[in-house]
Length: 325
Image (tube, rainbow, N blue to C red):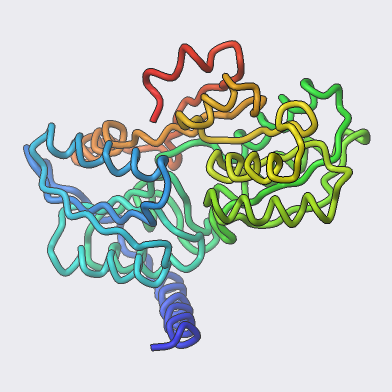
């Protein structure tokens, strides 16, 4: 099957899912109260420390509780992630935890779980709210406020620079909720500061080497840029490598700011190469499984269960290394 064929099949499934959702709405699936569960965790990819930490947390908490965990890795493919969820449904899991690769292409997976009578919890990333709703099609979203993360990064950058600077923005994976919201929150803050300008914005797909490549090209095209804002630490670290390869000094010639809070980024702050990073905590296991237990007990969960995240700069980076990832 070609990529074009896969994409066509995926969006055909999306169209059917949306059509089905406009029919008589089925009740949100319940979760029977039990001591132990068989649950699925559909991971989007495992190519960076954040994802590895998230997976480790989900596995560790399942082992602690004595739950059986069916784990899959979509390797960055939305089509495979839909198939992974369908496989979990076929295996008869009690509940599914999904970290969607992209907002729209994962709608068929959400609707398939609902149709099968299996409660689904979104963790870390959301889906298109116009096509699937918390409390109707899935139980809840558990994760960080990506819009707030982008806004926090923008406001901290304005304070740091006095509202002056020429910015290159490295976006996350196209179509993903963190990329969409981290851009929106940040861009809205920058738009209110006439002394600041985003001269280029391009996806680095949340990956270190892709971030390096994109930063290298954009820095060559915009030698006047003196700030890099990355949607995650992996791209920021890639950008730092590109800055150094260009003969410039990160932290002096070009200010680098980011989101996530991984150990390598904290070290970059300590080394003076990165100004700050806004935390996005990947340790979802305890919160995810606790939410399932509350839901099984009959509690009505809020549509969004928002994590509390921190802000890391030179004032606390060293002290925060011990519990980082």
